[in-house]
Amino acid sequence: MNRQTTLCSTDAVEAMLRSAVFLLLQLLVTVPYAFLSMLTFPLPPQRRYHIIMGWCRTNVRMIRSLLGISWKIEGWEHLPQRPSVILAKHQSALETILFPVLFPPQSFVLKRELHWLPFFGWGLAMLPMIAIDRSRGADAMTQVKLEGAKRLSEGWWVSVYPEGTRMPVGGKRRYKLGGATLATHAGAPIVPVALNTGEVWPRRAFIKYPGEATIIIGPAIETAGRSPEEVNAEVEAWIENTMHARFPHHYLRQTQTATA
Image 1 (cartoon, rainbow, N blue to C red):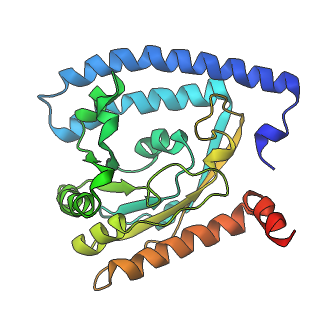
Image 2: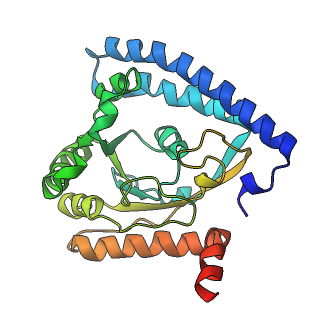
């Protein structure tokens, strides 16, 4: 059962107030970081990344203290010692804040519209992200493959959400080939990640709920000599099987509906 359905009315009001305070402080933090990010332009990319990602580290502290959200990470031992491609389930904005803090410096594949956001987009524009036009289909995949390979060769990791957008708890979309195509082209391993962040930070929801999220790092998947389709199928199978095994309550309602 999701945390938001188990809160009493008093707890729900408290969660709403905490979420409001968090949003206000997040806005207050974002504005100065946006201007700071512009000043980092002359610096080397890695140094620029470290400074700008202070925004994420600040948010992590606020998430813990104000929202009462914590997380546990399983599978640290699976992280390769060389730049890799992270393919992760995407349920929430929480992982987009956490991943830069948890994993080695990364280049995220993201929709280019995020660069147009006031303040927040300024910081993104100073980072070596891969901003794609999702409407361009094959051209976008080629961009991910070429720019992603360049980032990997420069020592960056690359993070991709293969479903392309945030999914509701228990939801699933077709896994797109972009991340697997990049990994097979570059010969880089893939790190699959399953998570349940949508339980505490639902997508498109104002209220965040106290509780512990779990992020599970799977064994690295080698890609050398394999096709993108084969690799993508293995990634999807691992993530979805792990989701069903570790968070079966996400899918209980679907099972009940199907058997009704």
